[in-house]
Image (cartoon, one colour):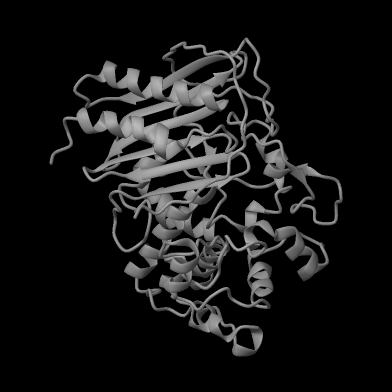
Length: 412
């Protein structure tokens, strides 16, 4: 059964379709970042920018399929910015940036960075796989014991049975779908509880707050997940906060991203950055991560004024969740990354037929690895769209085309 994470979606309607194609070298002008919904008006046009197109039996026909599919999906769902990338073994075959908005808005190109949400987790998987190769950690490493916590520090003694493999398999005893149990979206409350709100919640504070609470199920127990969700895992954002903290701890790095960048990203020429919570860091962003929600700030826990969900109003301080939700890159970098990292799981380099999605306010991402060696990635600047399904509708169209028009470099 395919493993996937389902995002709840909100409906918005658009009334008119425009179709315009533009191929251009993309340049990044300065632009003020917006974090609220964009209202449709009749000046909106669909525009796209090609970064790469090669290897298909008919490249122009392939381009017409890809741009037409994205045009229809974005217009029908009022999505203003997106990217699509298709690659084999990291070699780019198709790489595009798409825009559906007022033409006066600076265009997203093929190489601009989008917030990845849970697709950030593939890089944490890559980090743990590398540390296993270096014999610095094993799948059976007991995580809390390795971090130096003792039995007296936990409310639930079962936490000391949690292994690296349990966390990678989403079987660490934590059920993020269980209402109110996801620390990734409880960070303001954690900050208030752990420091009185003196600063945003740190990874260590999140871990120690979680240690004061019981697990949802026995670590490694698939039966709980099968009974409750009819699948062999219980999705856990917290597990990847814990894993990223483990990476920093056992390597002696100042933080997870510093080690990841030096040991995984730079050696593979992967341009993947941090998407921090502070809105001032995004004043010049081309990609406008859009969501209309507001709430109390996880960045400034004592501030009662509501802020956009994207900047901490969703109760997430992204700086403390780089391992699970807060990296940023382009669709092209995602398909390049999939050459050496599975879209889902962790034990093999590839996971053919499986896909992973990421969903958080202002972002929806999708990656998959096909049976024939092709990898596909799509990124969007919102998770609020109509009833169209990214996997069941948009990817199905692209997948169908690839099945009958496989690139020449891909063999059976």
